[in-house]
Image (cartoon, rainbow, N blue to C red; front, top):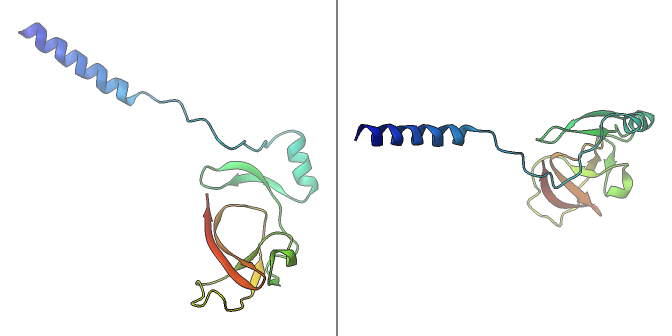
Length: 125
């Protein structure tokens, strides 16, 4: 009886320790931007800096846009996206004005303006 109890206790201990063991990270479905070597130089040549982006903090080249904050009605008015500022308009068909995004950082929550109309709200992490 004692041996069975010891064996059961040892088995439970082993299972608990196995549950605490680190698991391998899942395969990354997106390529990780390179933050060293020629890519860092190419980023700097465009006026950007390598910095962590999104929730995972992956290094990427983030370039500031010269037209940041400029009024826009469409992506074609900006180096990057034309973003709506404020709450979603009650009438989605009402004409709106956006602002050109500040940097090439693709992450965060934002709403785009296309052809002078509120297009959609989106969160990218």
